[in-house]
Amino acid sequence: MRKIKYRKGRKLQPYSLEYTGIHKDKESEMQLFVYDSFEVTEYEDFKVFDLDKLVNPQKTNWLNIHGLNNLDLIQAIGGHFDIDNFMLADILNTTRRTKLEESHDSLFFNIKSLLPTEHSDNISVEQISFLMKDGVLISFQEKRSDFFTHIRERIRTQSGIVRSKKADYLLYILLDAIMENFYITIENEEDKVEELINLSKRSTDPIILEKIEKHRDNFNFLKRSIIPLRDSLYDIKSIKDDNVFNAMEAENFSFFARLHQKSLELLEQIDSDMGSLESASNFFFSAQTHKMNEIMKTLTIVSALFIPLTFIVGVYGMNFENMPELKYQNGYYIVVAIMVLISIGMVVYFKKRRWF
Image 1 (cartoon, one colour):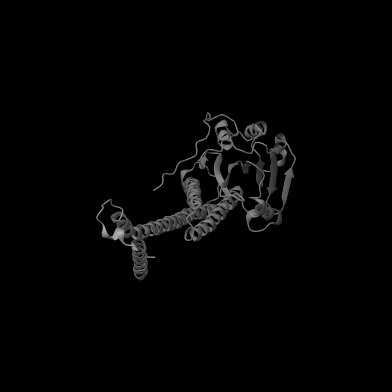
Image 2: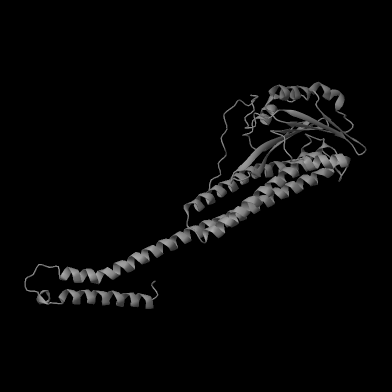
């Protein structure tokens, strides 16, 4: 069994506010949805101090932050919603594991979103954090992406039940959208593993083994990203019993149970795919062993052909004066003919035995 290791990030103090991700050139932007069953209002190009008049406590409010490199903006949001520096540090430190943290007035959840990289075997990673507090769901994304485009359209067009639900249901469908990215990534890996299996059956190119190990690392990375997500989703089910964070509607816990079941299915699928990858590895080593055996068989046959010929040449290469055959006029041609006949005879014998 391969040991799963977590990527080590640069050590920071738990309260240090420093963005550790790779999208440092992305501008920080804010987008706010305020909606209920009757209407939806969408805001852009506003300041943090405008939130006092834009947020409606009687409705569902979704504040989405794109880009985390503007520390002044992040700190301003933290000050407005009374978010402590420890939680802001978790939002900015993208090397942290998926975690769930609850208090009496807030619920914090961060998750890794994984997607395959185009024209590469690598997996792109983005950390997305959620904070639900005072009827407002705040999502923090490292960059602008289309993960939640369909959810925005559902809110705008009143599709489904999202407009009739509170922020906890919105959190559910956002998490569900991110988990769909895991399925996309795994399916992409499965297609490449299938190609590797077919390739390993007909080729012994060492690059195949490198690709097998690369995809094995990808599956391990997926697994160690999903395991803490599974644990966090399981912990959500205990929120209704611990009387700490009571802003979630009881009927919505079943939705998070579905997400927990999805995480279990993802882990089972990864284990199955790891088995397929092991098959590709076995095919490769079997093909390599077969090729080596063929080479050894060829060398053995060639060696066997030269054993009697070497013996004959060795006998007549001895420096004895009394060797009658050396005086024969056609002795050389006779010995060569005998050697040719022996070689032909051995080849015919090997052919009958199907040794080559």
